[in-house]
Length: 343
Image 1: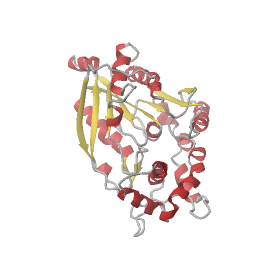
Image 2: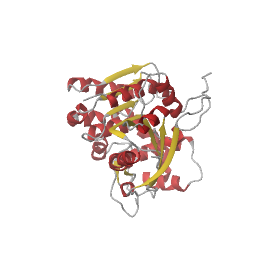
Image 3: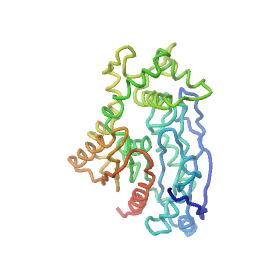
Image 4: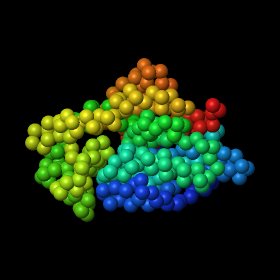
């Protein structure tokens, strides 16, 4: 049985809310978002002495959000507890750890700009980062870390934004869309076929008092469509959500699928060399039994990073997509070291 961590926090947890028009969206989700911040004693003391402290922003996986990742869980260690332990053990330097609420009515977030979901990529850089800088004595260096969708968000934003993020770590982040998503389309449309379209299915789910087990996966696929291929609003599709596959024969719509592929890190990396070379650390890992086959795309990505001469660290571990929070014991110290590194 895993050990439960009873250790009370010695540092400070702060909560505040931030409102931004960047998060205007078709779902009707609030633009006012709660942000949790963990400040360990060592970082608190440093700031009291006028020292500048770097920041790590945690991006949550699908069906999760920052407040959940900071909360109590049976037979587990919360991220603030892990943060304090790693610092106390001398394995990482003091940092400010940020947990934003990035949940959406479609079940999660890919941290890209979308008229359906909100401009989450812009929000991270143009709203959250300045807000943290205004509230705390930071050294101006910010890292992104996350698992699954959160890991994808870390990679995507590092690849597409220049001189915004100092370091990133992706744990089993979405890479290799051909193997990840395409094989699941038949399962998805079989589940939602009775509704006639993805738009009608989402409308039904948003009005439903409960979700079935199959709904979580189907809703995630619809959220991906909303993130990667938002369509114009029409009378019968007020959100603009359309899957890149036909409902009768499960045939791929190449135009729509090409829009998805533009967001695959395997595609983006070809134009991201300058942005990635500006990082002080780029860490990627994935289990060799990942249920979503992300290890195959990850292997291809790190091979391409090497071909392009982009510095990175890659670890493939024995394990799946599940129960991998322990990997943060590797990434958080690595990020903290990179955030303090002298240019």
